Length: 91
Image (cartoon, one colour):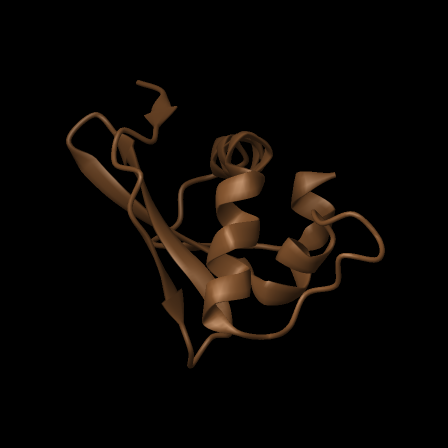
């Protein structure tokens, strides 16, 4: 099976300072978290990124394709119960 992202839902996890989203491998749900710092690297210089929920979610939406690609690469390295995506994972 391959990792897909049929549900566009995402939410901000204040405790982790990350955006949470779900991938699906067949019938299995796989939780992913992308650090707010990683999202900052997806915005062009000068745009800035406050560590606010709305800014993180907007950055996630703008970079969704590359984030999903990074999540697939991370997932292909080995199965875990959840994954944390860093800036290095989406370059």
